[in-house]
Amino acid sequence: MLPTIEPQTVITLISKRLTLILAGALFVSSGQLVAASSTGYSGSAGSQTWTTSYAECWQDPSTQRNLTPCRRDAVPDQLTLQLLFEFDKYVVPETVVNREVLREIDNYIRKVQRSPAQEQVTIVGHTDAKGSDSYNMALGLRRANAVRDYFIAQGYPENLLAPAQSRGKRELLSNYSPFSVEQRRVVITKIDR
Image (tube, rainbow, N blue to C red; front, side, top):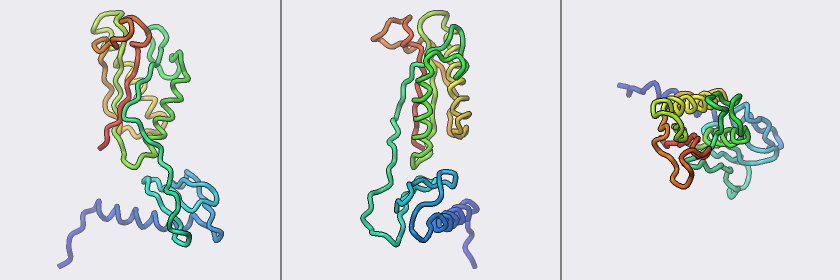
């Protein structure tokens, strides 16, 4: 009797075989990388190592064996951002005052997407001490949801984003005034699965 194979195992095997087929098709006779990131591979023209969309490092088998490994960007465990919003606003990017911080989010998204593991990301909004507890909890949540929506708009898989959270004014930074703009922050944390 033949053993039963789970559907997920079949999909994984097919996926790996397709990856091998695509990997072979990526090189022309000179050994230069032809495809770009749109095919799920990254490397540079003439490189003999490349990274698949699964973050696996591959090398051309016809070349030397002691090549430099593929470069992988380190993903910080936590990134604290101080997104400053217009008064009583929370739409990203339209109402963010310091838009240069959005570049940090974009870089973070790219690093997490290139990481070998698919990390789940949590996003927590904080406020300063102005306003009532209930108002600040709601405002922190609106801001965290706005950043979460921004992640999704940038192509980050929604299933890897935990529901947005708010701490309102409950976790104020002790080294700043309770009413300072530094208290208005969004904390983004990756969680290895």
